[in-house]
Length: 477
Ligand SMILES: [Zn+2]
Image 1 (cartoon, protein in one colour):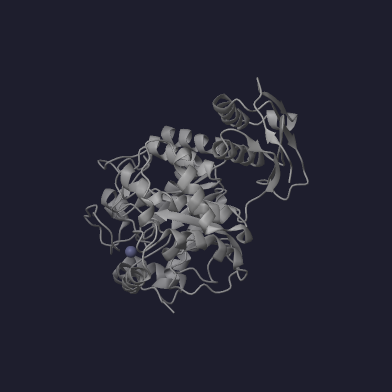
Image 2 (cartoon, helix red, strand yellow):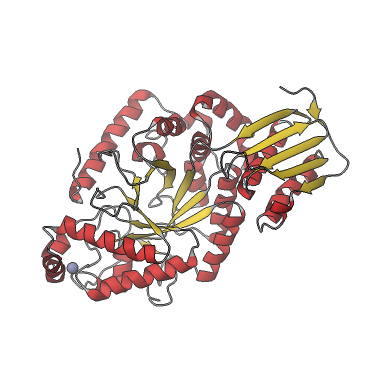
């Protein structure tokens, strides 16, 4: 424990290691530092040094002495996170920061948030605001759910009818700028094009890629819809590959999410083209046809430099071993797997749920639960916001705050340092200061609920998940 406090300087001087000065992201870090200094007039000397002995790229050391602040990091990411901590300290101690020395690094490398922009379009300015918030709380992945039954949100050059006439689409230029904005804030954007199910929006624009030929209309509300991509037609497979090429070229992240969830296979069972494909490949049933399709697109995505993520509905050991499984359905057994895993358990990360079904405490506990798991290769977690019923900023904010911030802390902070009551106290005091105004935060009295209401709500929801899974032909244990 160091004595003394960090005192006000008359001028800030930043001494930057030449290793960092060439980084594109450094001017954003300087902006954060300048903003901090202008508001607080406290930084006199800020020394930023490269150190290779830190345990990973995200790790940093931060030392505050009476007249000097030192940051040590291995990469720009570490510097960025150190500066975020510095900003938080300035807010928490408006008059004088107790001198301190700390070394910090994330407990889990994959700290993600999924925003469903397919069901409800989210304007670019709003996504930028969300990116700012994710960066403040040291999250590093934004997963954009760009297509579903209810919408297709990226303008395609080859297939311009996709998403046409809908409530909103992003141009390629907008996406490029958004990706750059996120990169500067150390956030990787991963695009998701859900297939071969959750595909009605694409089929309504191009019904020839379905088994029946359509016509289709874009549905409203939630549900599992029967019409899916036909995998027995060559043109459907060409379509998928060309879309993958366009998406892969827009997002520099080495990952792409291809959904693969909730796929009713009835159409394939009735489709002569799909049945012929199954026969030619010597496959026993439609599930094997699905596995073939997923492995095909995974292999094609790999040729474009992308590793594929899929939801855990159907993936097993016969699927390409490089596929990252996103485990969302808690009713599906997660066996020891050679696949890398990202967890997004329905009952702990679905922030679109009401607080009676997903109380704050359950979200906060999730990171600790994951950190204890040792039986599969866990990368991290993603907190999810589906938007069938969440259509504007106020509703979005109320679902996200404070639960998303609790989730971010639980993934970054080592389990032995998890303290729920500290989080509640700190967020109550300072949380709103970190969130761009105007912001809507769920009132504290609603953050948790009584156990009986919670248990009843959860029982009802489990029944619904079971019903949906059965409808999609998913075997539960
Ligand atoms: Zn078909």
